[in-house]
Image 1: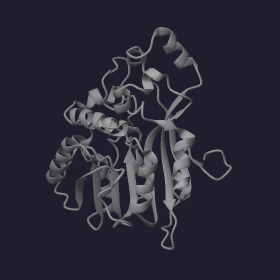
Image 2: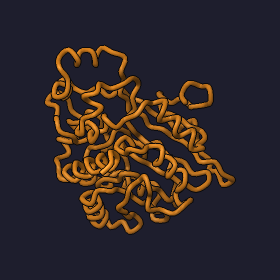
Image 3: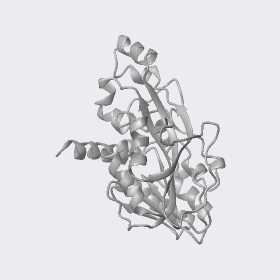
Image 4: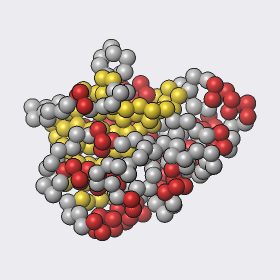
Length: 295
């Protein structure tokens, strides 16, 4: 088994366990990974409870943003959610796209697919389906989606560039995505970068912010915009499981930053949909233009 497959298997096993964990445990850890903090709550997650379409049973507390809030989903749209988990973002998207639209959730963990399908059946949603598959090779035809969303998932995938290319392939001309993810500024300590739990916890697999945005640009996307950005702080009681006191102080006082960003980008094409760039983001919005520093 090569390194990429080993990482995928680590994530698959961990997220099978996470599917059955308590939401509070997931929210007080790094994306459900071992090392629950006793000092803080909601290390990465944003509050979904006031978002239309929210379903408590489908919320496992694993996200790092609210991509559906910024995705400008319209009635009748076809929406794909990458790493759909128990289905919460799919159900929020379904509220926006309505009975006339379609929502496809993709996840490669059997336990998550089973949980999501059960939740969809309880809600009576016939236009929400969940497909088991690898988002590096999506089980979706070309030019299918009007909108793609994802919440704290690409950092778990070894080949992020391939996923972004797949997003480009499956979006319709003029379609767009809104994705929340974890990125870095500066190099993580080796103990965090190489630890399997930190990889499954959305930290070890994160890449540099400039590289992340660069992959989006290289794939041919336009109107690349950071819609929201927030700093992620790993509590001391989690850090101490990986770092000595000395290294922990170096890490906390150094130039390393861990951030959750929500990124918007649009696929070019004659059928390009109109999007409101003025409302695509919040106070942290910044457009990524060539030479503009963002990309």
